[in-house]
Each structure stands twice: as C-alpha cells, then as structure tokens.
Length: 382
Ligand SMILES: Cc1cc2nc3c(=O)[nH]c(=O)nc-3n(C[C@H](O)[C@H](O)[C@H](O)COP(=O)(O)O)c2cc1C
Image (cartoon, rainbow, N blue to C red; front, side, top):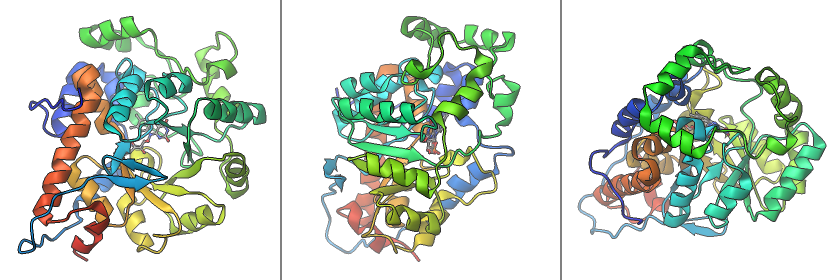
C-alpha cells in the first residue's frame, strides 16, 4: 500500500512525540542527540527556517511535478532517507521497513555501514534501489571485500562519509552508557521493560548487531574492543588521496557526505566525485560548526553544473525541502524524521513519512505556483 497516511501524525513533531513514547529513553536520546551543548542542532533548523520563498499568485495555476532526475534515475520526490546507524536499536527492523517503503515509492534509501541490517539483505528488500553509506575502511582487505560485496549486490551509488574523524561527544549517550565502548546498565534495562511494544518487536527481530560488519569482527568480540575495531578496521582516513583511491576503485556514482566548506566541494570536483552531501551529520559532530544551509548558500550556485549538490541536516518538512532546493540543492535527505516515523508507526512508518512530506511539498509548490523543483531558485527571496 503506497497511499498510507495516518492523520494523527501530520508533521515531524507529532511523529517525534509518538516515537518518544514508544522508544526506550536511551535509544530516543541516541537518535536525538547533537554534540556537547547541542547548539548546532538548533542552528541547523533555525537557519533553514530563515529561508524565504515568494509566491507569484497572479501567474497561471500549475500541475506540480515532484519527480527529480538524479544519477540517471527519475525519483518520485526530491528527498530520500539519510543513513542512520543502529536504526534497529531505535526501532526493530527499521532499515528493512524504510528501505522497502523507499523502493516502493521510488525514493532513495541510504544504508549505513553501521546498520543493523546487512547490505545484502537491504539490496534484496529494496530490489536493488538502495544506496550505501561507507566509512573508508582502514584495512585494505576489508575495503576490497566491502566494495566487492556492494558490486555483487547491485549497488550503484555510494556515499562516503567524511565528517567523523572522531566520535561525537554526546552528553546523553555518555550518561546512558552508549558512548564508546557501549555498556548496558540496569537503568537501560528498566527503560526497555517500560516500552512493551519496542520490547516485543525487538524480541521478534532479535538483538540488533552490525550485520554488514560482522564478517570482519573477531568472533564474540567484547564491547570494550568496539572502538579499536572501528578505528583499526572500519573508519580510516578520508583525506584527498585516500578518497581518490576509493573513487578510482568504484565504477558507480561516488558521493562525498559531510562537507559544508566550498574548498572541500572544489576538492570533490577535482577528484571526480559525482556528488557531495552538504551536511554536518545532523549536528552530531561539531557543535560550533556552520549550519548546512549556510554551507549550501556559500556555494552561491558556483558548482551547479559540475557536481550534484545533495543536502541534509535540519530538514523536517516539505517546506524545508523546498527551502533547500530553492537555495541550490539538487536533492535532499532526512535522517531523524524517518526514524521517528518507523518508531511511531512500525511497518507503515516509512510510507506515512514519504506521503506526509510529499503532501507538504506539493502544498508549498502549488502555493508558490512552481511546477517543478528545478524552478524553485526563482522564488527565493535574496
Ligand atoms: C542517530 C543517528 C545516526 C546516524 N548515523 C549515521 C551513519 O551511520 N552514517 C552517516 O553517514 N550519517 C549518520 N547520521 C547522519 C545522517 O545521515 C544525516 O546526516 C542527519 O541525520 C541529517 O540530519 P537530520 O537528522 O536533522 O535530518 C546519523 C544521524 C543520526 C541522527
């Protein structure tokens, strides 16, 4: 069913409120967290909400076409589902729920390297439509093997994340025992017991583990070795030279995720990347960083025809999607909102969130009298 829409949850805020009721506190706080004082979190949403669009009400009415061409595919909407690690901890089977909904409704779902579903499983449920988010593996054998697995499973698009040179300092995760290495405390167990629907769904789905990475982990690896495993195997250097090696090994579309600086966009162009994601990881890494909309605006349309400019961090609504597209983005992604939706509505969450965002986006476009996303920059108030 692709038209599922639950009127109890017409916006991201109501999905968030329901998600908070459904998820154990430590899992909800892991999803919500920014970095240190969480100032960047508010900067992302506030500055995106400063974007103004001006309608042209006396021009003829339009039929809004929400489709967008990107990397040789025509998507049904100008937004997709950003990679979120450990989605299965926040809501059991969330990667499968969201990947299936995205494939059915023809928008991209990006699978995180540290996901609780394997890349093979997500390729299968998304019928080859999913994208993959990669941390540049430190270990050359792991890198070769992962790239081989991605090719064998039919992935066309990889997003290499470059904004995690260190683990984010997240205050609630530290209090909750979810920093590196993670520790399951009695308090966390009590929090799980007070969320019966989460507990039951988790019991049915099984304990969430990093399924894609399992083959590279020592058997029964203790939790206190997780940080060194991540550093020594999974999250290697992402400077220009390291990324160029990866670029040259990957035949499909190569997208660099997590930059807000025009000079980094130039480097991405120079190495032959097909796209960049203007993103600050949902403000989870650098609390005093620029908002990602400021990063996009700073480009001033300079790279428009050289590389695809994708955008995330702070997008919560169809209005935000339109604001980013008007500011020069070719496509947008949302992270937290889709996890709220899976936690609020289980297997229908992905479809609901896509329909919600589509309805909001079409309303904004119709109100502006803008027929297609590519025309949105004309409506931007400068
Ligand atoms: C809980 C959580 C986990 C995330 N995990 C990853 C990840 O594994 N890889 C990655 O590239 N980005 C990750 N991100 C960042 C998202 O891909 C995306 O950039 C961000 O969520 C966008 O901001 P938004 O949540 O305001 O929409 C994560 C974000 C959140 C909230």
